[in-house]
Amino acid sequence: MYTHKKQYITTGAAGADARAALIMLHGRGAAAEDIVRLSSVLHIDSLKIYAPQATNSSWYPYSFMADDEQNQPALASALEVLNDLVNDVNKDGISTDRIYFLGFSQGACLALEYIARYPASYAGVIAFTGGLIGKTLDPGKYAGNLIKTPVLITTGVPDEHVPFSRVEETVKILGDMHAEVTLKVFKGRRHTIINDEITLANDLILKNALRK
Image (tube, rainbow, N blue to C red; front, side, top):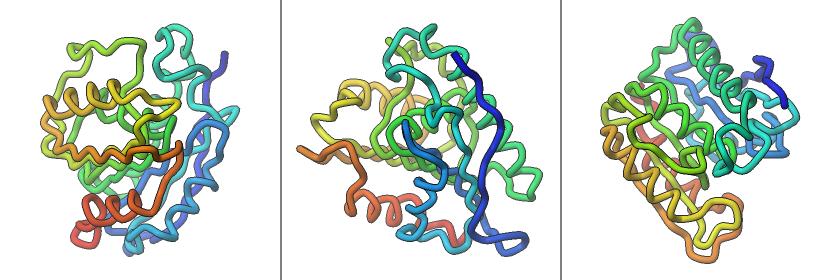
């Protein structure tokens, strides 16, 4: 088993030019540089990008629906690293309500799990194929208010890694925490990110970035 070191790359707007921040979380087997490449098609010219790197290129070793113990201590460490990163963003002068999250697959799962465990008013969350983490979900574990945080969850049906039933559970829990969740389903879409999802992210979540 393993834990994570806090290591991340930054790019995009800098200093006083940064109106908001975007934390980008890569998927299993990928790297921070991989997820940052998406920035070229996102409407984020005024955002500073932070992209953490997972140890062994994986935020946790097994499926996001494995027994909780199997993914420890990696999962707890990943959430701690992400929380430390949010604190670093705050120290850079960007308040929590101006922080966006974006993740794909394992990174999407981590982003959703983070906001559910550390609820606050965030600028927005983009989860390309993911859900809350655990063999079963206990809604009682997630307490707090997401204060109308806009959340976009996209998924293919069927998806080989993320059952649609878990996506539905996630939408319900986050909605009960007062997030404003939009779910978009793409029938027959493979486990990837397609142009329609990028358009949704720009139009639904990142459209307010210039006003932050």
